Image 1 (cartoon, rainbow, N blue to C red):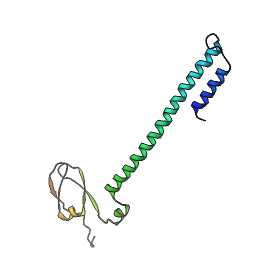
Image 2 (spheres, helix red, strand yellow):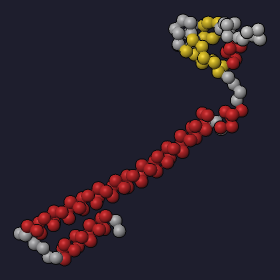
Image 3 (cartoon, rainbow, N blue to C red):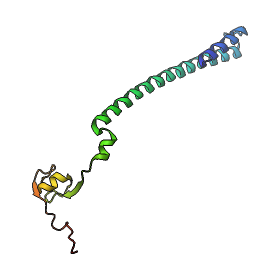
Image 4 (cartoon, rainbow, N blue to C red):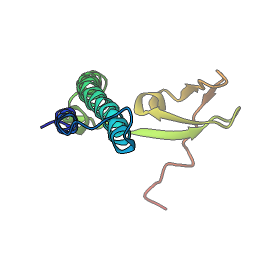
Amino acid sequence: MTISEKVAYLKGLAEGLDLDTEKSKEGKLISVMIGILEEVAMSIEDLEENDLDLGEEIDVLSDDLADVEDIVYGDDEDYEDEDEDFFEVECPNCEEPLVIDEDALSEGVVQCPNCEEKFSLDLSDDICTEDE
């Protein structure tokens, strides 16, 4: 039984008592209380209906987001198969950290996306030899 049905039952019981809602203080009180309960019941039913609608919309958005994630990130297997390494360097001009891949590292020249200055990578200090 819904809240509205329970309030309607209560209203029927009150009407069956033949209370004088015009002159009797108790009758006026019960009538006002039932009116308030009817409004509360309608508000609750509206909230429950909105809750169901929002839940359906969230499900649709979640499905859409999953589709976007599949497009952007691909399958998890794609990540596991990648052996690509990334390196972080600092731009000597603007001192912003940059993340570069192996291809850029092998070229030896990088263009900073922040200040658009090109600089060469000197890895002579970073390479370890067997003598060390």
